[in-house]
Amino acid sequence: MATLPASLETVTYLFRHGHYIKDTTSVSDAVLNWNHLTKGAKGTGYPSPFPDDVTNPGLVFFWIGFGVLCAFWLLFFILTVRRDEQKRRFHYLTTGALGISFVAYYCMARGQGSVALYDIFVTTNKFSPYRVFYFARYLAWITGHSLILLDMALLAGTSLNNGGILLFSNVITFLCWLLGGLSTSSTKWGWFGFGMAFFCVIYLFLIFPVRKSATEKSPEVERTYNILLIIICLTWIVYPVLWIIGQGVKAVSVNAEVITFAIVEIFALGVFGLVLLFSESAIEEATFKDAEKMRLPATYTPSSTIYQGVLETKN
Image 1 (tube, rainbow, N blue to C red):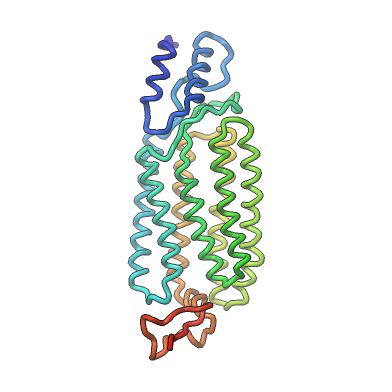
Image 2 (spheres, rainbow, N blue to C red; image 1 turned 90 degrees about the vertical axis):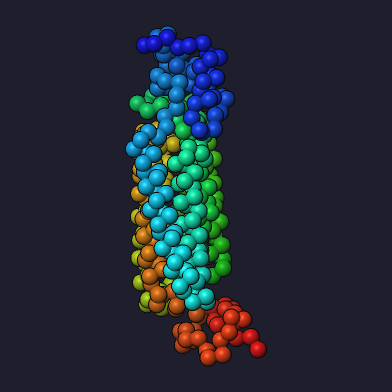
């Protein structure tokens, strides 16, 4: 094995290498551990002072994720402007969620929104405990996925309390997992546990009280809601699983994380949006409280307002 350059020179080079944010403690731990391995001492990590980061396959999927999500955003934007103004709320929310996501993917594809951290909790693994953590995606999930859950709450016509609990739980879930990903010790498992508790709340409310509201709304709303619920249940469950094997125990590479998340995001946001925005009957029935008033009155003007789901014309 090659001789390691002077520690000061190595640390300086590591701080200049890569676009990710450098953590002083993590860089020092990586260099110290590398020195131990080169001297024949028992090391606790991967024999390299450089963090595990995306290579060409992962970078390609960053750009694929950006391109596909951007295409979905453009499609949803066109659908929005072609929709009657009083029927656009689901279009605004879904288009906004896609916009947040593709901007996050552009950020990560350019090497930003990430930090290299050395996880002292990981002692033996074929993958490096020193790896790049892409926190930009968590910021996108905190905001963008809240809009998706708001879509579900409005479609079902559920109570304000249920909608508020969904949004609050989403923010806390991904905030806790973000803090866990930024932790470099066993503290991360505490953050993951807190996030998982609120993640279960999201599933429970979507499956029971919110779904009950959708069932009581109309058959068309119920059918669309159930399809969207299946998409969410099948895609979102990947988030905690990949957090455990990725950020938790470092059992997969950063490339594997990036590729899996990109595929999941396309279904969780793009396919979700397609199903919702092309379900015109469900959108109309969810927009107007009284199905008999779905037709615009002849006296409708741009000054008309939607109040509590019923179109009312100002006198």
